[in-house]
Image (cartoon, rainbow, N blue to C red; front, side, top):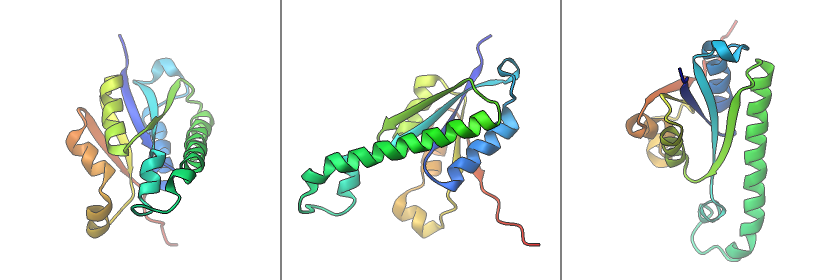
Length: 162
């Protein structure tokens, strides 16, 4: 019997790393044969043109900076996936597929669900308020409405005061 696939969306945030750690703790064991899911970790890397475009329209010299922005985005993607690998290794979960895909995180994650025939998508919640969520858009909200699978949104608990 083939295992179901669980996709975990990653960015370079504490919320994302917490979501991965929580998922590994609750759904995976060091014994791959005992895990119910195959794990796919996906990082959406913005395109350099999009990243430069966020700085404002018609920024002088934008074309010249695109190669540098692209290099930096690749470095960030590698850092995110390396940290995800470290987290998986620390919990002895080793049978993992890691992907960095260029594009908007909303689309990249929904497409990863389709590509891998995932039954669960896990994303971290950044905890944005209504106004910030309306301006920036919520990846988790978008995925909850558009992904063709169950979506689990993992919230980072507030710090407990002693």
